Image (cartoon, rainbow, N blue to C red; front, side):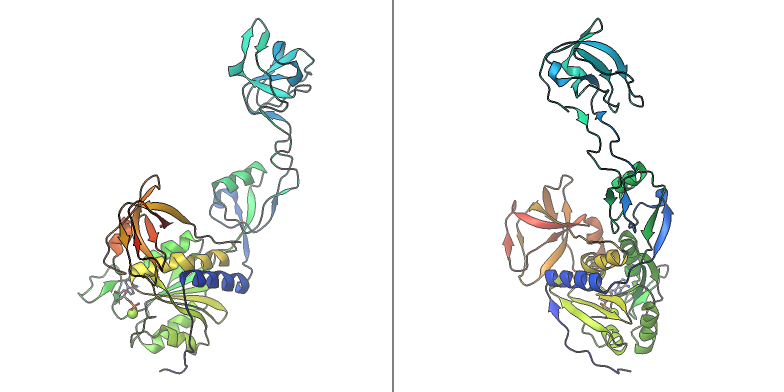
Length: 405
Ligand code: AMP
Ligand code: MG
């Protein structure tokens, strides 16, 4: 039964639609809850607290080379070696004029010394070291607090923790950290033609691949996916499942958003009081694409064709999952590479076409593909070639934008 009306909803270009998602989710997201996790579980999570340095880094001046700690004013010249200092030790004495201390990388610079000469640049003989060249003060020394000061905030909340961030947390002695709870994302496929993946489909049926690819994409964005049963193209069952999906932190729908007679997703959402921010974006694949909010939850109605589902998730829904997960920012870096061959398109749309980027990133080759249903081509690709909508032709060797897969 069709109860509501869908008011006219905006058609946006790629940049406008992306900005719309970022703005709406930044402004309308609830503050996520937090968990405390051990450092070994923190990789990939989003930091929920500011983290400060527990002491100066480095805590004292350290040598960054193997060599000799000297007084810069003494060289060039010949110096008496009065001892050595290794990493993990500290030298008890003081370097006087005319003296040097043999020093290893990471060891504290002895009192009195103010530079380190690399071992490769000296000659050592009979307890003496010959330094043939001048050296600047502080050369080859990492000064106390040159990386950060005690109590200085070195990681802000909202940062996704990668290997370097986890290393930094370990450095300052944080064995447990507060992270944001992962957003729970419901994934709802629609369509009378969809069968389970373990079934043998009839010729006019397809297996439910979209929920599986979306599950991977949601997890990669830091969300926790739940796959709901397939909604058939009937009003009541679709409505029931959409209402269920709106009980999660976010709802991802696949299919049912085109202009067909049985594309009822928008109607159901309108009847549930949804606000629609856009329902068409000038991109390919993926023109019919719905983004809005209902019952306080953001939802995306992604087009059902698998390539469209995958691409529109990456372009728009990934940002929403990341922001709902407490990330301060969500980025979509478009790199530039050079075309391996001439390329031509019909103008009007920003296209995201499966392509292979060479191992060094220098050359991009578009793949042949049969349109939005062509999963094998997307699987062969390692990137998408990104066109400008108003340009018709490119020559081989010309720069073009690329989105990594
Ligand atoms: P729709 O956007 O509902 O018009 O769906 C377009 C096409 O995408 C359908 O004809 C199917 O071939 C395909 N499709 C829709 N949903 C799925 C799904 N969950 N998994 C795989 N393919 C799908
Ligand atoms: Mg459908």
